[in-house]
Structure formats: structure tokens, C-alpha cells
Length: 130
Image (cartoon, rainbow, N blue to C red):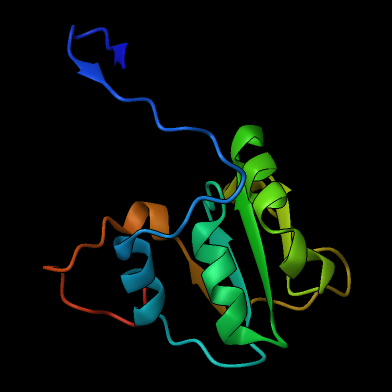
């Protein structure tokens, strides 16, 4: 355990390359209107749990996972070697407001931001977040 500035203690979660998806993340991905062939943009991907789940539902599509944190994108890359190698996923360290598509790069069909959705089981399901 570590001590927070408030004096409270908390357990520090281990930094693993591939952390399993929580029930909240699974519920969020289940609510997305995913289908094979989609191009998805995951904003604020963190360690990559949601994008990894998405790849299984959009293949042969593609997901670009972005985060402004190099630590988060390093973890996402480490835990997502298989979908990245298969061409189903890429990870970039960039803020959403700085993302510009390269010339010839196809636009995305669906933007997603699991981290900011603050989705819970009590929240009404919404398939279209944008």
C-alpha cells in the first residue's frame, strides 16, 4: 500500500502490459454499434483494454487508439502486439485535438472514448456517443 497526500492508504495496482477488461469496459464496448469492417478511433485509450475488445468485433476493420500519455500508449502497444501485427490496430501518442489524418488516410466511422464516458450499469445504454 502507499500513502496518498490525504493520508489515506491505497493499494497500488501493478503496471501490466495487458490488464483484463473490467465489467464497465466490457459493458461500454457492448453498447457500441460495432460491426465488421468499421474504422474506429478510441480517444484516451489508456492501457488498451477497450481497443483490444473492439478489434475482435470489427475485424477486418481497424481501430486507432490514441492517448496523450506515453506511458499509457506504451502499455497499450505492449498488450496489443497481436492485433497490431495483424493490422487491426495502431496506437499513437497524441492528444485528440492534435490528431490530423495523413493524406489518403480514411476517416473513422465511429469515435469512442470509454475513459470519459463514466459509464455504469445504472446509466442508460446509448449506442451512439457522438
